[in-house]
Picture 1 (tube, rainbow, N blue to C red):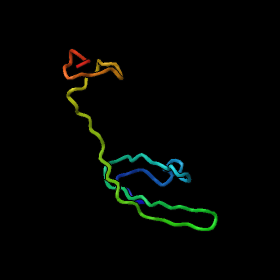
Picture 2 (cartoon, rainbow, N blue to C red):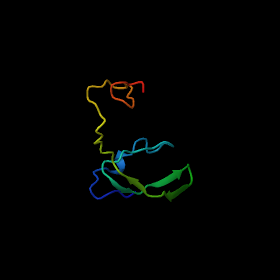
Picture 3 (tube, helix red, strand yellow):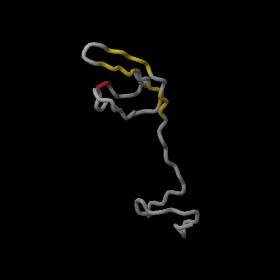
Picture 4 (cartoon, rainbow, N blue to C red):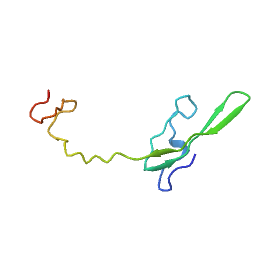
Length: 83
């Protein structure tokens, strides 16, 4: 696996790395390359997966309202959440 140069992650950061549902959470934007290796008792095979391009969400949404309760509906008109 290769990761962006400024990433602090290591192979140890892969969660459940011996399961069929292994995962990791990238810590920086950039291109990540992942190699999938499948092993059984006597054989192993590996394939390099297509590049994963990670771009973080930078939320500068002017519609955010800090006074709104989590999960509260937001409508087209700020004064009527049912629009």
